[in-house]
Amino acid sequence: MPLCRLVSEEGRHKPIPLPHQQTLTLGRGPETKIKDQKCSRNQVELKADCNRGFISVKQVPLKPGQKLYMVNQLYPYFVEFTEDISLISSEERNKPMKRQHQKDSQEQESPASKLSTSCCTQQTSNGALVLGKATAHKAEPAGHWSQGLKVSMQDPKMQVYSDEKVVVIKDKYPKAQYHWLVLPWVSISSLKALRSEHCELLKHMQKVGDRMIQQCPDAQKLHFRLGYHAIPSMSHIHLHVISQDFDSPALKNKKHWNSFTTDYFIDSQDVIAMLEQDGRVSVKEGTAELLKQPLRCHICCKEQATIPKLKEHLKSHLSSCLKGETV
Image (cartoon, rainbow, N blue to C red; front, side, top):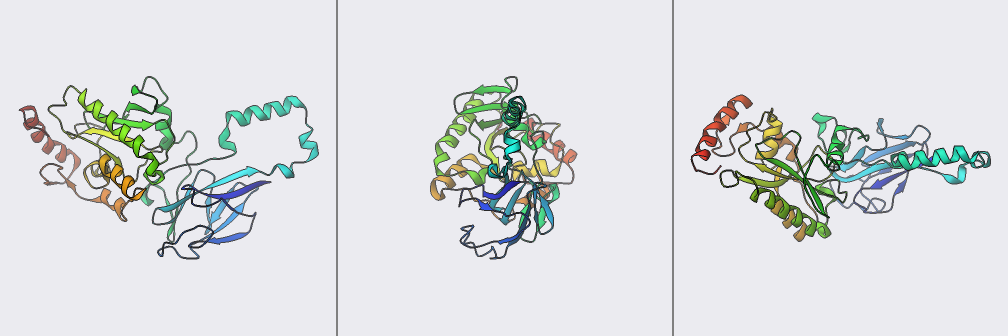
């Protein structure tokens, strides 16, 4: 029978064993090392079904690859199922070598069969399951759309720059005339996984982003921003380098617009400053609600009723830009 553990993504403490079919109550306390008063001592009840490969969180199934936040998008955990070698029968261990070799090959090709982690950070409207103050997110299998960056960054056809630390790709659905993503080769799930030791890496990512802007043929006409989404929908941390014209057919809705023109978009330098000062990146409570704000021009702040009207309004600013003014 597989063994189940609840693993702190931030490495705050040792993995917490979840015994088969036994209810375990967790929250603020010595097991989780959580001292946040917003987190109850009885924050969440978990029950593992090791045979079927999932845990129940207040009657909501949580499978390998899903993420559980203890409170308000803080203290992330993922589920881990591993085989208990001590329970494998002697008959199983003595199967023909050919069959064992096939099993070993399958394990090598599919490491996710032993451990599956994810870093989906979507809000309730995008599929999160709200459990009181705890939140469990939908699983992200290898082919899930949110894992697309990990595939794209490995594709030579997608790469526009790479070095030993980072790779730059074009955004598949650019929200402006120029929209690149700078991704580190090292696996970092999200802003919340960043620590002070990542400062130099993020500074390098910013330098590479600045270099992309310098090489852009319209660098003298267009204004650019470098930053991160506070709550990204795509797995693997990535720095957006985006021109502020927002002239793109892929910019289709309010969520797209507000994700780049409100405080939902955190400047690269601000992220680095937080890491240097606090050793972590803090996302303000209620940040997700920024995506629902009215459509306002990022230049003159005039409110627009629809995306088409906003885009028509932006043309006037772009026209000024082409006459020599910067946007």
